[in-house]
Length: 372
Ligand SMILES: Cc1ncc(COP(=O)(O)O)c(C=O)c1O
View 1 (tube, helix red, strand yellow):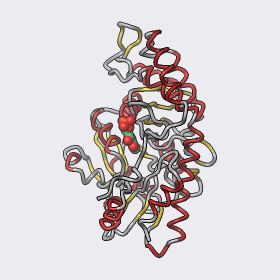
View 2 (cartoon, rainbow, N blue to C red):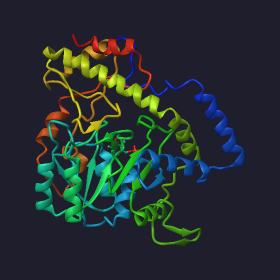
View 3 (tube, rainbow, N blue to C red):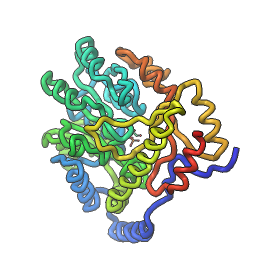
View 4 (cartoon, helix red, strand yellow):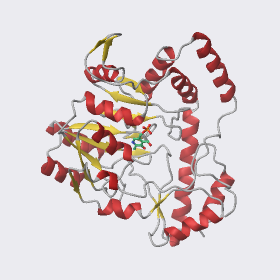
């Protein structure tokens, strides 16, 4: 194996001047001993609310807590059934279990790899859920997003949108978060807006829910020593907020860089259709944020593509190599599942190539040179 020439993600490739600004900011926070809350957190929350066209944005410790806060603030808990897609990051499932609710997985649609709307309707009939978590994966979302939203609204089902990966995604020319009842974001370092550690946020148009989230994320506090009930400590610290505020300045350029790389890959695999590899493309309701490149390769040939990439020192990702319902750890908690075969098939076919802001054209060409 050769040394890695192109990493899957390079978090060290940052803008000139960012390091100096960050050092100044740390000095300022240190000298004012401003570590929890304060103006950096407020500034971040207002930028997020504005970007996402959402009336309320509440920051928290990470994207997993954001989902747990959204569930708990919506009154989802012990004995409630919550539907989620069978293909997502484990955190979506874990958050449901952690609030004491019972998850039901639903298969995905092979065209966009998001939860299948028709199977979701079947799951609602069968399991009568209190809530559903729709996950916007890969930098776009379901081509039937509007139907999900209308269906849930009509039936009084709580719809939480896990938008950990979808910062900057446009749906029908507006932020994907803007028409959600309640949605969540992750600021994990590899996300579109990445922190220098962990961070997350919940967005909602409902003031009562926003107040409840803020209270839950701060020990259930009404004021310093008076508590509405048990919450936990899921506050975002000021240092993360300050870093995110600096990074936010560069966000449009970073997203534009990602999108350029995403379309380079898309064009390459379209031009080389004889390879039998497709690059998944969102439906035209969406403008993607370039979160990842997502290839579908025949499962039988995936090991040999991986071998070539490894030989050439090119990083890659499998997002995700297993479905939720196939995970051993899910079995004791699953209330049920609807389908799962498509998700299972996709887990054996997905392959992602390096994609991050400031990836060089030369590097993109090196990555695809393995596919000839
Ligand atoms: C779809 C999805 N949901 C939830 C999360 C959890 O976010 P965090 O790592 O910030 O807790 C992630 C992060 O990887 C994610 O991709």
